[in-house]
Every structure is written in structure tokens, then in C-alpha cells.
Length: 132
Image (cartoon, rainbow, N blue to C red):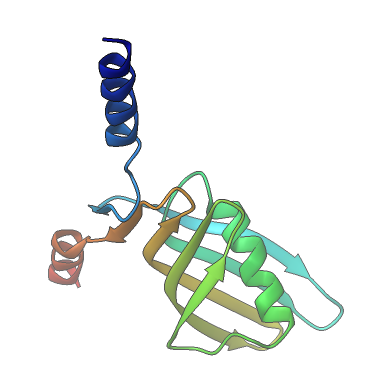
């Protein structure tokens, strides 16, 4: 009887802990300026779009580091390695005089616990394009 109870507890714990390889979508993320940095020669603004609230500052800091190391290119997809999640997204860099704006659009968030979230804001994008 003890073996049966122990076995059923073990099965239930492993069943509930299986978040690994789960994929879900999200439609609403945070948009905005995350970081403004000034150097002698320029002002750099890091903005994120469709970001997740808990990791947006960490990812913005990592993007700034990548920019300072000249590892970012405009209109390219990048993997940004964060503290609790990695993010795949597209980067757009705009420069005008002493101002540099780095816009990063989240596409996929790979959480450390195995959950993968994919941004799916197509309905919102259609509405925004109808306004233009």
C-alpha cells in the first residue's frame, strides 16, 4: 500500500511539473523607452516593443551592451540572453546627428523554465495599419 501511494505521488508531481517545451502565445506586451544613455558623442535610446514586464529592463540593458560592442545591425533578428529568459526579436537602429534610437521588437521569449511565448499581435497590427 505504501508503494502504491508513493508511486501515485511521484507520478502526480512529475505530471504537474512538466512545463518544459510548452509553447503559448501572447497578444499584449509593454511598449516604451527603457534606457537613455549619454556619451560624449551621442545619446542612445533603447526602446522595446511587445516586451514582457518582468524582463524588459534586463533585456534593454543587454541590448545596450550589444550596441556598445557593435554587435547589433538594423533589420536583423537577434537572440538576447537575459537573466531569467532569452528573447528573439528584430532590431531597428535609427541615427540622426548625435541621437541613436535602437528599437527592439520581441518575437519569442524563451523562459528558463522551458516555457516559450510567441508574440501574436496580428489583430492589433491590422487595426493600427487601418488607421494610417
